Amino acid sequence: MPLTMARTGEKTTVRGIHGKEETRRFLESLGFVEGGKVTIVSEMGGNLIVNVKDTRIALSKTMASKIMV
Image (cartoon, rainbow, N blue to C red; front, side, top):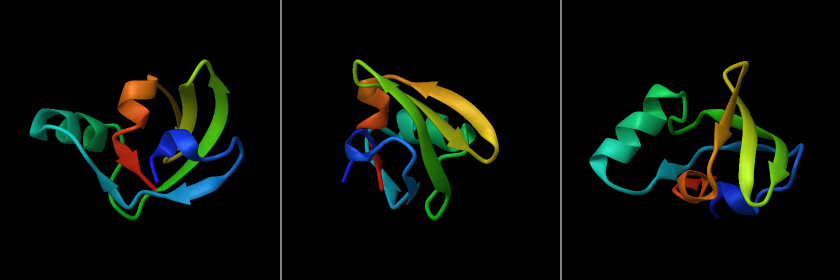
């Protein structure tokens, strides 16, 4: 399921990243790698703030939908 469907506070594991090669590389540089742990901190209007590798990152709904958990 896409990251946008996970609940706030839920710890999930990244299963894959969809999209163009450029998008995948960008998300991987932020720490979204297969097997990595992601926790949703908050959600507002579909946009997410997530905790990845002890860092908080804001993601648009579009980018978050490319991350499969």
